[in-house]
Amino acid sequence: MRADGTSSLRDWLRSDLSASEVPWLAASVTTLFQSGPPGSRITVAVVGDGFGPQDQDAYNTAVDTLLTNGLFAQDFFEANKAAFNIVRVNLVSLESGVGTKTYGTDGNLIRQDDRDTALGAYYNGDWAHLWIEDGPSTAGRLASALSELVPEHQLKLVVLNNPGRGGRGGNWRATVPLGIGWPTLAHEFGHAMGRLGDEYHDRDETYGDTEPTVPNLTTNTDRATLKWGRSVRAETLVPTGGDDYTPPKPSGWDDSQDVGLFEGGGGSYRFGVYRPVVNCRMRKNNPEFCPVCAKAMTEVVAPYLANAPLIGVGSGDTTAALSEGDGTGYVRLVVRLEQGVLRVLEARELDGPFVETGLVTQGFAHEVRIGDRRVALGSLPDAGVSRGFSEIGTDGPREHVVHRPDAFDFVVRVASAELRGADLSELTVDLVSVGAGRGDALGEVPLREDPALDVTPIASLADLSVADLPMSLRRIVEPE
Image (cartoon, rainbow, N blue to C red):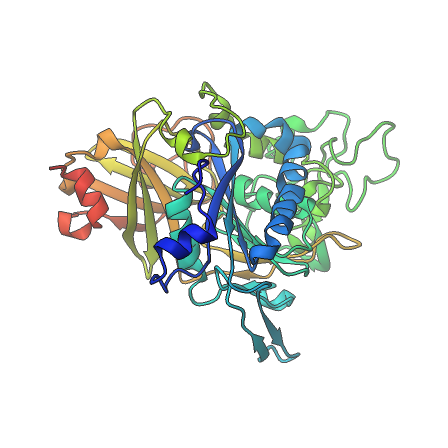
């Protein structure tokens, strides 16, 4: 083990020759920047797949290009950098490059080339197959590596050693090849963090569904009740246009920052649904977020910016940060929804403070209660979905292909003091779907019963016994 806490290939060979289940040669962890204790910031964990010993410098450069010199050097993310930590994990694969799959025009697999890599992911380069696929062990290997090396993380970015374009996102994870640029990643983070909808359209279809739950799309053309009506100047026409402002365009009009009501969006629909501006990051990736999208993103990051302690920047050692909190401590639970049933997969007690936003947005949300008290609450805007995404084209990104997996995992964080010695018969974990959210503080009424929210109960974990819990959580609830 090196002085900076990282391991080397020589260390691994000396100490772990018999560990055939370890799918990589060595691992190291580097904090690229740190704005505060991991639990008090949105920690982005970056992991590489298919990078052999000779590829580690190229991997480091790719991460710098995407994140430190790319995404977090630009507009919204640069301005709110203090809400984030970035941790780079270097896994050394046995072979260089990742596995590939090739599909025929009928959609059937016609060729598969395997590589012995850290995570076992595949690049298929096919829009209809979401560009990228996990191998049978990819999700488990990634979870295992991050649980050990970056135990507190929210956003996950997996970088594949393949030169292709296109990527796959969902559930606060993005997987990309080397051909993806930071603007595409910024667009995808808009989905993952802000529950933002796509503002482009690639077909001449008419939207015929109910009012979109995302904050930046609407079917409403009434200025008085428009969800972003306060951002529309009195002199701006409503509706305002389609792909551009209906002539004549006002002098000095800014297509990405001046708000109106423009027809077309949602990926497919030229008619019947409206977006706030002519051109936003959620339409063509490169422009900044419009005021409506920026507001939604700001609501997410704001709690991580308020009254949080600052710890040294760029220390390169995540273990030091974990021990420098305020001593409160918290339990990080990984919970799985499968076939309508919730199950605790992992429990990890971590030192230091953590931020709970209290924000309930559209999408999934979770709540933990002990008796009549709420002890944890969080939104999961990107859970339960896996979508392919592409680089910008002539008219914007190509429509997402969306897959909804049968099962997904999510993270719940609870103060250790709340769980230690708790009466399990009074503890419940609820997962709900929220059709309309709000950013203000909620009352003490259970989330599933809140009359101010459009809530659909999904699953509940209740009437627990110690035997229902993983051993790590049993030790917390019933310490010796």
